[in-house]
Image (cartoon, rainbow, N blue to C red):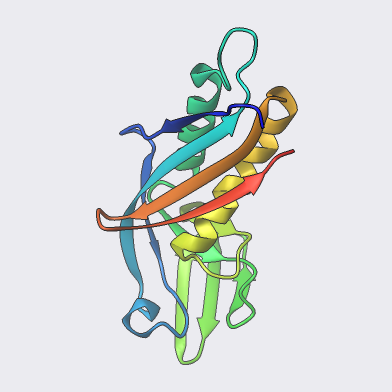
Length: 161
């Protein structure tokens, strides 16, 4: 087995604040928000320059993902327990006895079943892998951690090769 190198990226600017709700999860079913922090780890064989990935390439990718989600309402697009109605300027969500209406520009429809840190870490990992894999053939795997506040984090890891 060849020796493998890993890099871990955890920059202060790789964070976002967002609101969400989680159906059938007690008090988390109420509209609430968090400060989220991303950690990205990549592993593989260093290239001839001794690097797995250029930090100047990966850091802007992570920062852009965070900007897309910052100060937004996160809506789980794949959750069939709620109804989503998309209007010209607003998004309406209904489930059980609840009805939320948000300005469309303030929302992100995330292609996940729930906006838990587990699902968000998977979404971010798959998204970054799609950008990294074509231009960095020596990256063998990527892992993304999404921290909710300061005390808990979920991670998602995929093999690229």
